[in-house]
Length: 162
Length: 165
Image (tube, rainbow over all chains, first blue to last red; front, side):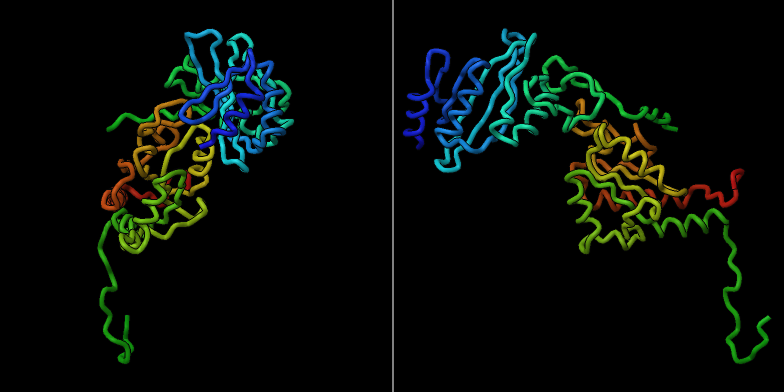
């Protein structure tokens, strides 16, 4: 389906610290956080991945480093997706921001920041976007208690049924 | 009293009833709902209030899109913690007498949303008169719920003059 571009990615971007594989027909690049910005810049400027689809994280509580940060990009010319995955530790869950390359990254990084606590270096507007000011913790981390609620108003105590 | 021979003889000049029954009867047929619609139950709300099921038959259909003009708050859909202050403010803006229907299982108990975001039951924010479960509720259930609320209104006290007024 998308063999030529996959071969190009493997040829041009694969290296000793960038692992290129194929998962369910989609090219996947595993790389260290330090290589992220340079690799994505080449994906955008040389290989035509002009649409930033999403950034999210995966929490592996037992693993070190604990978090995967997963990016998806799309080439509107070739109609091909690519996945970029990097690992960050719990102690320093930080990657470089992609706002310099894709404007939409500002909003997606805000969501990933509030849900998983990933810090995007260089994105200076990491206010909550779906959550609210004052929310403590990161609800999509697996150590966030499932039923912990954070009220904005005092909870009303229902009267006992009469 | 009516001595004019050109006018028909008076009938029904007097009714004997109780004040609460009369006002309850009037109020139960003049419900003006404010739809606080947040989620997919809105589709069912549209269905039950439009031609096919037509809650207007029960005197409970004309939605007022201002809480100050309405006396029935229909909370239709999931309410989350970020919305909880809004819902309480809407409720407080409504004039007495006022009633609340929790429409659908999310408003009733949170449904399958038992997590950091959703409020499990709007009775943790405002008092609720009738809960209509279902995901979404059938129109028959909604009509039944409205009729139950009407029964409740008809059977309750309606103080016109109280200690505050």
